[in-house]
Length: 429
Image 1 (cartoon, one colour):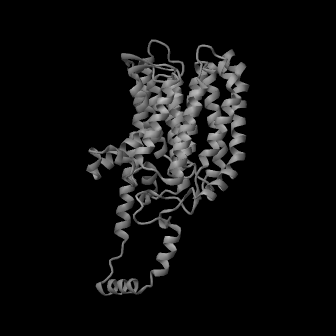
Image 2: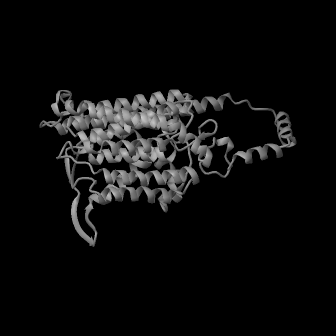
Image 3: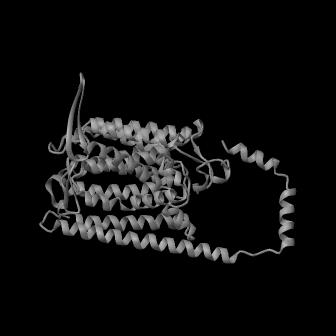
């Protein structure tokens, strides 16, 4: 890693670390207040057993006990404040200048959507609408996918049509298909990162590892402004992690999960990293999400006519669900997925940094192939383990004689369930 001896990096390393540390302290101190706020406004997450049977998200709920949401609000506050404090540092590199205003406005939009979802559990349509608007904000401030990108050694032109719009004080240059793909990219990564966090500490851990990998690539290209921004985000997430680690006292909620996905999408747009490497780094959440989408399309044919219904379907097809079904504990699931994303990101770093030579394309293709092979082995192994575990459970089931079955049914029917139903309804709001 030649960037460790780069004078520009060494000169600004203290600023990068300081930004992350300030963000960590702010987030860590704000979390308790956010938890109290969540309880006071009713932004809480109920386990499956306390939810109504008609609750569409009941099937996928694996949290234990009542947990306050809004943990991500602490991350948002920390990022917001630290970005403002560190704003002068963004001008250190005149060639790569981040537009903090666009990022801040986008953060606020994502925060509002996440808050509404945590408080009122808004529909998938309004979630996507908010995510898309945050992407449009980025485009307006000049943050979008470049006009030309390179994937697996192939150059792809994303500037086939331009049109300038002038509405007085509002001016906008539309670039097709770059800006359309940017919106799809931001919305996709927000939701894919959101889906990956089903176990305490998992979303924060995976996001932080991905962000740290992007930080290494930012340093390798001397992109100091981006490195500072990533450091701020990592610090804010680590400030929440002690409260979210199993057994958690608070969960990130929609604010945290959406913000993490949004920031990862922004880092990719601002970075100088080859898009092959970006795809490798994000391979775990992307492939996990694609498998879930495929499964939902097979079991719910109606989503082919209305893709928005994909967001409202609750199932147990995510990797963390399958690992738990295979018999692993929550802590084990966290460690397995953290180890897996660490391996994938290590492959990206090993092959991705310092690949400006003539054989760079071959190295990136090799990295992509290895990463996909690792993920294929892991996902296949998990599927096999899950099916084996289910089969073992089925074989261990005791078949009761008819007389005993009738006795069990009689006891259940005679049980006075009115009081239990009242207790259930008392928590299921």
